[in-house]
Amino acid sequence: MCGLSFRNITALAPMVRVGTLPMRLLALDYGADVVYCEVRIDYNVIKTVRVPEVLDTVDFVAPDERVMFRTCEREKDRVVFQMGTADPDRALIVAKLVEQDVAAVDVNMGCPKEYSTKGGMGAALLSDPDKIVAILQKLVSGVSIPVTCKIRILPSLEETVSLVRRIEKTGVAAVAVHGRLKEERPRHPLHLDHIQAAARAVSIPVIANGGSLDLVKTNSDIEAFRRASGASSVMLARAAMWNASVFMEGGPLPLEAVMEDYLKHAIRYNNHAFNTKYCLCQMLRDKVESPLGKQLQAAQTTQEISEAFGLQEFYQQIQDQLQVKRNSLQSCSQLEEPLVEGDVTMMAVRFERREYPPHITPKMFLLEWSRKEKLEQPLYEMVQRSEDRSFQSTVTVESKKYRSTLWEKSKKFAEQAAAVVCLRVLGVPEGRIGEEDSGLVCKRKLNGTAEEEGSKKRHVFETQQEADSAASGDSTKSQKL
Image (cartoon, rainbow, N blue to C red; front, side, top):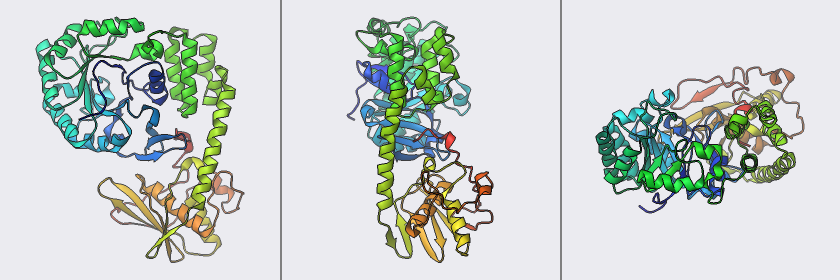
């Protein structure tokens, strides 16, 4: 298997809430060879839809519009997607979903947090070597990119060595070893002897992890940690979180410069404001109660964070550029010619919640238009694709059928997409932001009353009917543009 090499590299470790796109790009800017995303739980990723974005990113978006994973071309050959899983089949589904957009996939086998271990994932896997082997073998044989895993050490040297040897036999490209037991925390000393023993026991690259507090404070310490551990490579977590310029040979840079560089990435890629604030606060550490820290903590939006760092002009410039792209994409989508197949009119349309005001949806507009024209209420027919459980909806209005050619992970979004197709073909307003008020939706709808009360629904392969409220897709949940 060719692709990303894990030998003699320095990597940004996977960190929950930290390893998002801005931090990964920052680490690459400063000299990291490989970057890991924060761990993503398999159940959540399976439900996502892969969406190319106006940001020039690829987003994996959950049914509630949360962006579970965002990546871009810049990191494609060096980003490792880390998943939390306890099931070989689910692991392979996730790996196949992200395979074309990442350089490698990694299985988390060291996270001691309850949200991970209670599902048999993370550090819980350390007590079930047979399952570890089953997961890794399934992945290695099922994807074309390298597969790795990250473990914690076991109580004895013999157990740690036995585990890494079994892992090597699965065909993985590398194994990262955090030199602490699953019960231990950063305040506990690192067990270098376990990493050394693991590195001696296998021929695949071993990536040493866990030395941020004790051993790695500057860039020159990285090579010393590599030699002391006997490992091929080094992975940094907290040292990089505190100041990512630790990856620079000439570093570190002043913290203020690092924070500004990070924030610019966060602005460019529309990172969620609360995640951006969290990462910046981690960088401030004991200075979080400084005037800048207090202003940062008080900020609620990316714009307010930008103002705290004097980057309001940069923020506005990026927003203006993105709006131009949005307008261009909307114009192109509206000019797209519909296709007719049998008795169904189709367009390649995806429902984008961010394009509509809160409590307003295309389904609501279609229902009100039908009432105004004294037509029967729209009838939605749903089908589900068995291989990936995606949905596609067809709406019937005045005996004519309309659907999107694109499949959705959510039944609600599939119905909204069908409504968009119908409205665009008919030339009826759909409620998009910036449209002139059509008067189709009365004020009681704007107050969040239930959408499409009494509308008829018929689902093929799905017997349960859903009450689709207008407020169900609250755009405040979204990290997307």
